[in-house]
Length: 78
Image (tube, rainbow, N blue to C red; front, side):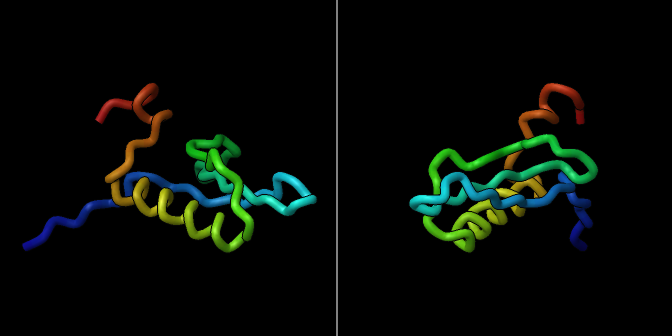
């Protein structure tokens, strides 16, 4: 029997345009219900789809608990 593990993090990915010429995109993972940035990309992406894909990988890792939310470390104890 496998134990059901609940989602460890609730958030969303936001992709922003950093510069217009040349067009460069960045992603950030934010908490649901607030605009607090938990993680963001350091390097710009040439395409919005690439930024979205990279951001979703981080979001998935946060949701399943394999990546720790730095704000959670400071404010919560498991």
